Amino acid sequence: MKTTLIVESNIQFQDFYSINLHTWIGANCVLKDDAKFAIEHLQKDPSSIKLIITRAKVGTERSAEAIYEYLAASKLEIPIIVIGQSPLMQKVIVHIKSALEIKALIQAAAKALNVTAQEMAEAQVDDYFPIPIQHFYLIKQSICNVFLEDEDQPKQFKLFLNELGDISATEIKILISNKVSYLHVEKINRLKFVTNINQEIAAKLELKDLNEDEKTVALEMSLSLLQEKMQRMGITDETVELGNRNLRGMVQSAKNVPNLKHLLRRLLKNKSGYQYKHSQVLMFVATQLMDQLDWVNKEQRDKLQFIAFFHDIALQNSEQARIHTKKGLREANFNSEEKELVNKHAHLSAALAAQYPNAPIGVEQIIKQHHGMTNGIGFSEHYSQNISPMAIVFILAEDFVDSLMYAEKNFSITKKIAIMRETYTTQRFQKIINALESITI
Ligand SMILES: [Fe+2]
Ligand SMILES: [Fe+2]
Image 1 (tube, rainbow, N blue to C red):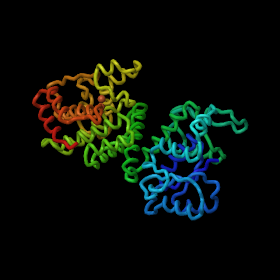
Image 2 (image 1 turned 180 degrees about the vertical axis):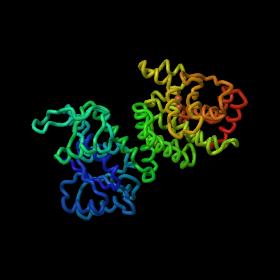
Image 3 (image 1 turned 90 degrees about the vertical axis):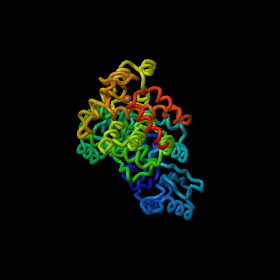
Image 4 (image 1 turned 30 degrees about the vertical axis):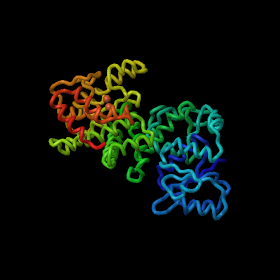
């Protein structure tokens, strides 16, 4: 058995490690809240543990170092993966900066446990994949059908829950008391199911407990979850709660970085996808830009932040979010349904904003017009005369951010501003371009 000892006090992270190690490398986990308990476990049963994954620090305890010293003193040769900054980095130990870096974590764990890529692929031969039953407490609905193995006939499965059917915690409890350890999903749905669980876990994490890298990844994961849920369920108590958390997190994140460069570097380092990156950078640029304008009050700044967060909420992925022109949409490799969604996304996002409780007044209109079309359908580079000053700020901020995203390292603010001055010739646009010129990159 590839038993891994996890040293982590946060229950959400404990779930996260368990389900991912189980799914991707078939490892089971022993969970301990801190090094003291982990060492107690190692004293009792050292030989069963094949890998240790530990936080650098749990509270004030320097957990990784405590475990490292214990292993050295007891002459135990168990590989360690440390999550977060630690002085052990000098020694030959694997470090992962953020616990949410699933890929890096799984690769490091697979290596330490001598699981090859081929073994990982071959291990998944059964048609039904077992998911430890306790993970079903984390979700209210399952995004695919869930099956229960027949008690009397092993390998025979019956449908337990329909795709998107409500999960009852009481029912799960009863199954657990009847000694059921796993529920199953079809092999083909395994990735989708685990990704959804990961997002649910990320959305429940308290951002204040996370390091900056973890925050970035958690916000991106929970934004994807929010989009998927908004499209599936529309505006409900659940999506609004998730939306509010996400908005707060992204506003906070934009506030806590010293400059744009720093933010971009962090997003790059955490391999953020276009869609999240675009909204997060836009939030930063729009906020900075608003701070430069003398007619702006707090209410208007909040409004623009809401728009940066919400304007593309109806889209499903980064490929769709990259489209900003008619030509781009025509040439995109999308099916007709997707093309229709992208074409109408401003209208659809505005309709969701209109139903969103306590959304700032007027956001619906600006979201609808964010691609220059008054009805929110299609894309245009021409803006009508009666567009509001707030809408102008947003359109300019988005244009600026798009160029920044595309050009990446080759971005020149001077060149971009010059192009913008030629594109948007009216006085009202030019004034805001002046302000844009003075934001700190
Ligand atoms: Fe956008
Ligand atoms: Fe858009």
